[in-house]
Image (cartoon, rainbow, N blue to C red; front, side, top):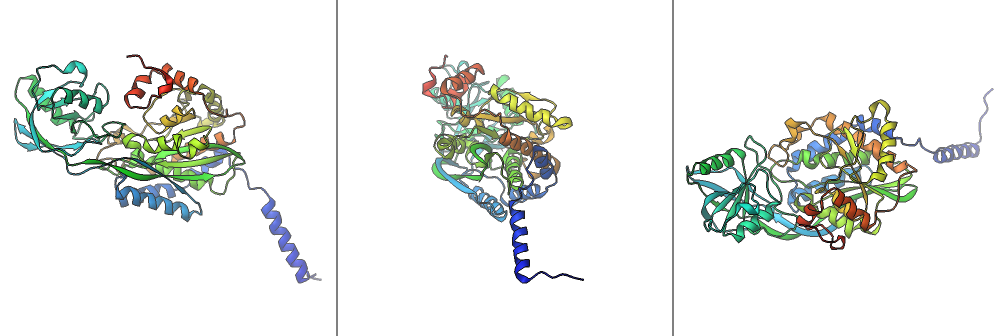
Length: 473
């Protein structure tokens, strides 16, 4: 005999079942679970493919950068997430048609591009003088006025330093030999200061640069003509932030720069980081970890770390410093994790790597400080930072900053496998009860950089804090 519930009883039972389901905690996301989730997800791969193919390079301040950022925002909104823009001002730079031509020994248009922050100049011609590495010892008082200097591939200081030396000795321009052969051109900023360079500087290929150097060594005349039309201008741009609140207000920031140079698609540098953060966003959606996690896509990195400088010193992370910042800049599949000078982070990183069992990174945990990516402003602000030793295959990475930095240089496996390791670490750090809190004081930060012998390099790019004391010559 069937028994039937009254309508009111059925309604009460349904409500009770729904309430029970809502009150039942979801299965907690583990490091291994996060990795498995990312490995099975092709969406970040497809997202990066479309971002690269639809917009090309993402030079900060360009229409392409803004359109690509809008696409990222929309993709996050489609996931039910609410990213926020963090607006800031920076010295922008607009690339126009900058030209370099050989006049002697033969007339030909040279393969060259202007360095970031070169300014508009009149057309000029000059004899080429080989300056070696461009150090102070290369300059003498009897050099011809109006000459065009040739230096590199390695250089004594940053390009703006060489430009200032050359201008003081009457030079009219410079050519910087690229560090990769095969007709490649390394796009780069002329300096981290954001000011117009004192002379126009062109990146030239090894083939044409070494050709000129060989002729000069034989005592033969070499002459070039150049004209720059690019220019600097103040711009307003944005970082994009996405917060996943945890049970604690303590925050792990995971950052990757969104911008790129403009000649290629910026797939490796740093579309890879964009996709890795997007994979994290998809994985953390609907999860609550012990600590909050905030994802930040920085702008202005290539021209001088402008987005991360703002975020760490004036923006949200200055008001509420994270306890760890994880930087994703050209991170291939990791072979090691790097504490970047913060030894007290190493136990947490060791616990995470040991917990990976057979999937433990073969290189283990490193503690090597280096600078000139988006972790540097956070380090200077006293925040502990982490990145990975994660090489991209040589046959691909040689094209970074060049025309050849395109989506086809990345495989689905590189994107998914690297993202899986990153997701595993982020979940581990967010849930590790023994992770050190707070920030480093200024004295400990200064000691860390001095121990790594980085004070001169930081001073050269204008980032050595005055309160740290003088830097010895």
